[in-house]
Image (cartoon, rainbow, N blue to C red; front, side):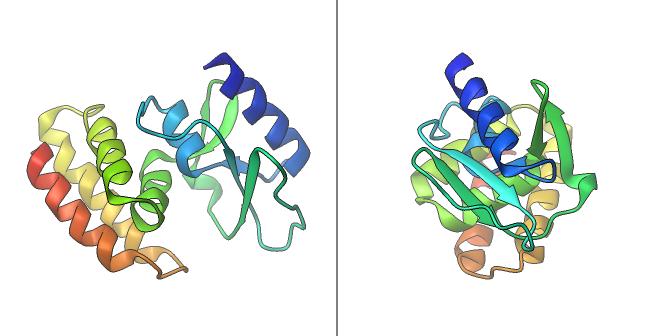
Amino acid sequence: MTNLLTRAFEALRTAGPEAVLTHHTALALYGCKAADRGIVHVLVPDQRRVRSRPGVDVHHGDFSIRDVENVHGLRVLSLDHALAHVLCREASSVALACFEQAVERYPPDHRGAFAERVGRCIRARADHRGQRKALLMLRSCYRLAA
């Protein structure tokens, strides 16, 4: 984890004060062991001109400051939003494993509300690619987790 924290800190420093960690990097910091730790994923506002480089994948898009949390002293996109990105864009097996690990953070009687929040994040994405797949997977995952 130390190596990931060091690389994530450096990626945020380079990307600027509005940047947040997202996708697999955020999920790994929340404790999802299935998340890929090889590349640091950073989300920056659309108007910020930051480019990907070896080991750092920069994503451009809008996000609300309300959806940013402090994890290990780093700015990280909330668990439900980061999971929505992975469910929409990643291989089903990895996304399913990440969802199962994320939902375990909650007591059984709160897991339905968490799944609903993730579903709202999926539907609210400006990038509609993968939404149908993600929502189907979410329904399937939630039946397993409930």
